[in-house]
Length: 386
Image (cartoon, rainbow, N blue to C red; front, side, top):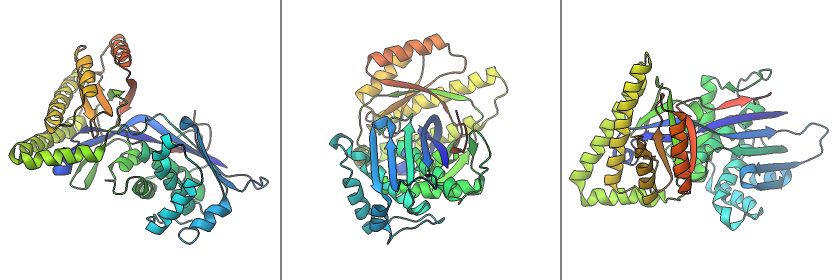
C-alpha cells in the first residue's frame, strides 16, 4: 500500500524579528510543496528494511528494521499520541544516522533524518517501509522546508497507520478533517523540535492548515485571505545565521531602546493592518487593485523598518532595486541577511514584465519562483494525484 502527502512552505508576510519583541506578525502558506511518498511492502515482499530517499538531494538511507528496533525499541512503538523525543533517544538516533555516512557538505541534514526516524517509529512502529521525499522548496532559505518535510511525512504515516479518518477510495488530493489536522500538527511539531530544538510552531502550523496565521506572544490565530495573492519569490542563495541576526537586533535594542521600541510598535501596526486588509472583501478588479496598492505600501514600510533593524543584505538590496525599476515592491521574508525576498505581483501585471524581472534577477545569480500565497495546507492521496 502506498500513500502520498504534500505540505506547503511558508512566508512571513509582515512582522519578522519584531515578533520576538512582542509585535504582531503574519505568516502565510506558499504554493511550493514538499511531497512524501510512503509505501508498505506487500505480504509477499521479503524486504525487511527501512528506506528513506531524498531525491532532490541524491541521498538514500537504508537500515534493517531490526537495527532500528534494537536502538529505539525501549523508547518508542506505534502510538496515536504525539510524544517528544527523550535526550537519550536523540543520541541513539544520531548514531543510526552516523552509520549512513552523510557527505560532509550535507551534514546539516542529519537532524532531519533523525526526525524521520522518530516520526516513523512512533507512528508506524518497526515495520518495513519505503519513503521518498521530493520538494519544490529550497533548503535553508526561510521558506519552512523542514516544517513542510515534517508535515508531509507525518501526514502520510498517520494515514497508513489508521490513526486518522481518511477515505482510501478517494482519487486525487484530499484534505485532512479538522480534528485530524490538530493531531497532524502536533506530530509535525515533534519533528520540528528534533530539527530546531525550540521552534515557535508557526512554520508547521502554516504548513498543516494552509491559508494565513496572525501570531503574537505565542498566540496563533488562523485567518482567511480574501485577496488572491501572487508573489515572485527570489532566493538570493546567501545562507544566513538566524541566531546571529536575532541577537543583532536584540543588541541594537539594548543600545537604542527608545528608538527600537518605536520601530517594533510601527511593525506591529503594519502587521495588524496587513491582517485586516487581506481579510477585507474584494468585489471586483477595482477594489482588488486598491487593496494590492495598500499592501504594497505596507510591504515597503515593513522593509524599511527591517532595514533599520540591521537585517538586510547587499543581495536583498539588489533585488529591491531591480524590482523597483519595474515599479514593483519587495521585502525580505524571514530572518534576512540573505535568504528569500518577496515581490508582490499585482493581478493585472503583464506576464512580459514578470519575465523581464525574472531574467534580470537570474542574471545576478538568483533563483526565482512564482507562487500563490495563502492557499491549501496538507493533503494526502491514495490514488492518482497528478
